[in-house]
Image 1: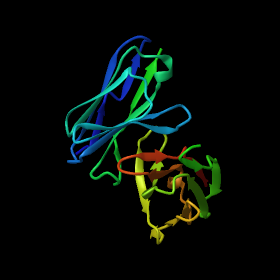
Image 2 (image 1 turned 90 degrees about the vertical axis):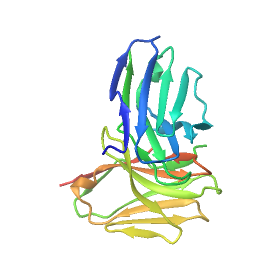
Image 3 (image 1 turned 180 degrees about the vertical axis):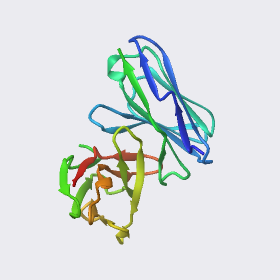
Image 4 (image 1 turned 135 degrees about the vertical axis):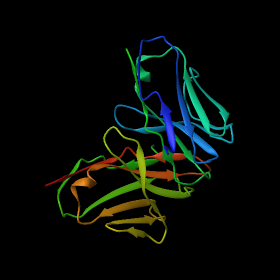
Length: 112
Length: 109
């Protein structure tokens, strides 16, 4: 019954590695997002997809590449991980463009 | 300048107290407004949407002042379970959501 799910929940990796985080929503929503929440708890949007098309791409290093294979999935691939990438990454979805956001449980990424 | 500004607190209040949080937003074209609640190490969850006429949900009252670009949240009769971080969220256009840094509330027995 999980509405928005993310895997993995925890990810610990070395600098320079490449990793992916997966997100799935079973709400039938059209729009999905990736957010980064840093150590100061500030939640900042990274990407937004609407019906598999990229809508928003905030100022994010191009080491981050989102991929949406279908409307229900939005994955985040990160190349050449850096220490500053350590954060909690949240996936979210909305039905319409201005509606309530439903968040996944978050992926806590630690880069050593 | 940040799109959304909030006083980070922390607010430490006794049970039963009334507490108010404020939030300002910078873009007058902002379309919709929300308060979210985030518990420690959890995801944000919608507390309530904020409507121009103001709205109430039990002990929680939200107000919007478009002229002053100001949103507020009032919590009456605080419970221990209200302890959390409260996030002010503004939708600018389409699916651009901007979050405040959050206001930390601890309700003390």
